[in-house]
Length: 297
Image 1 (cartoon, rainbow, N blue to C red):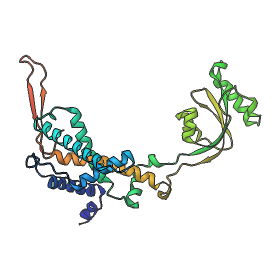
Image 2 (cartoon, rainbow, N blue to C red; image 1 turned 120 degrees about the horizontal axis):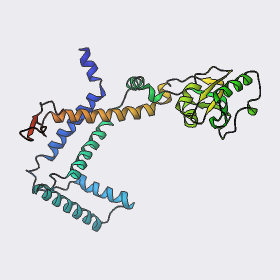
Image 3 (cartoon, rainbow, N blue to C red; image 1 turned 90 degrees about the horizontal axis):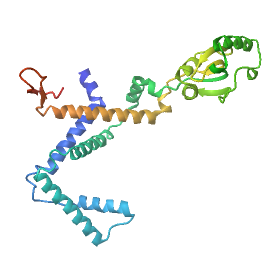
Image 4 (cartoon, helix red, strand yellow; image 1 turned 180 degrees about the horizontal axis):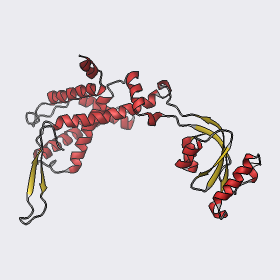
């Protein structure tokens, strides 16, 4: 019973139920294609859609003559479409296949927005994907730069300058000239990465406060660093980023719905994959692989 309750609360199940319901609805409304082969019904809803599309493009309602033209265009499209299908012109056309697949996926995406995520579900999603929503550490620091090309032994020179900095010498009078800023205030780890590289940023946010440290290596050279303030990284409260979490949750649910729908639909097909066998003395032969009802592997 507890498992059943848990399943009923699962959003993906809701998606599948709605999706399957839509497929049955489409089938019921449209009926077998063969039965309606020579009947074209332009419903009131279709007429309204034609008029709405015209209004959206031209910013006004169509005249009676323009409406007649829209109907004639729709009829031309429908007749040629049905005749092309009857002739099998859609077969073997990858462009048409991709377009129809896209339309079906669009339907599934429309289904996904019908299910609202609860705060509990969003919180669980946040915990499962902490790396997406984590607010990275911040730091305020000074840096003194040493250029590899200007020192025979840059490591030894860095040790000497570090000792002088720790005795209180002015950092502006030490190190080598650079276009890099010397002082950074409350810059995030991501911001440090953009300026100095990932390895440098990861090391800086772990340095002790209030003491010159280093050398720290970047793509530019060596740096002696004084961290004056740090703000630890944290996972924000849901209320702070609810819309962002909801958007990412919906993206994931759409992916899951498409995959789950494909897996369910595939069960209704028998898939045979013919692969050439490896060359041998007999020659190449085709091997038919008949997949189980659960789908292709």
